[in-house]
Image (cartoon, rainbow, N blue to C red; front, side, top):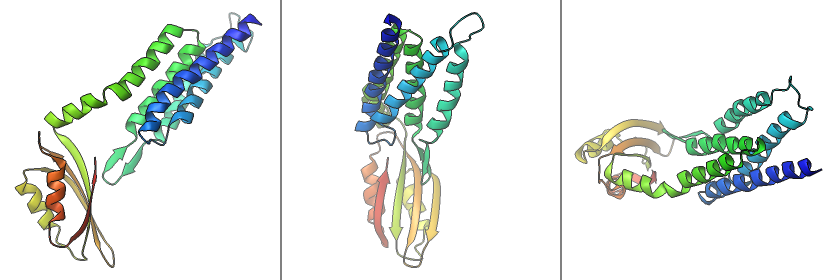
Amino acid sequence: MSQDVELLVRLLLAAVLGGAIGAERELNDQPAGLRTHMLLTIGACLFTLISAYGFGGGLRTDPSRIAAQVVTGIGFLGGGAIVRHGLTVKGVTTAASIWATASVGVAIGAGSYVLGVGGAVLVVATLFGLRRADTVLQRWGVSREEYLLETHPGFDVERIVELVRREKVDLRALERHETDDATNVVLLVKLPPRYRSERLLDALGRLEGVRQVEWHH
């Protein structure tokens, strides 16, 4: 009975740690949030516990086999969080957090409390605490931005290319989609250091024939 209580405590701790990581994703309005990350750690921990204690132990039991399969299975789930949005790919950080969260569950299930708690703290610190560092790096480094433009039909996209060159912005990709009542343009650029995204957004919006501009960071 005492062993069952300890295993249940491991399961509960795994859920709490997964919830802590998922809360950060939830606050950032990501598709995989609190419940997803809690279920990940609970499932990974439970699989580990079943592997280690559910088959009677013994010399022929290899607890690492199920844990290894958890890593493979989580890769499939994490891939579902990665989506293409226009010319950019989003969800990579969430996919990485899913993968790391599973390892926290495995660690707790294996009884490595220090590693499990420490790993969860590091994951949360990386997701939440380093966001400000990202802002500083983007301010001093090169920033990659995406702009969605809705223009009048037959709009000459060369005008956009000329504007980007005048602004000394690096044009990485441009897609044009024609409809009956509009020309939609997806623009992917790299901004030089200290260049404000709002400056390019304002310049694009002032182009004659441009109806609407959306900025995706």
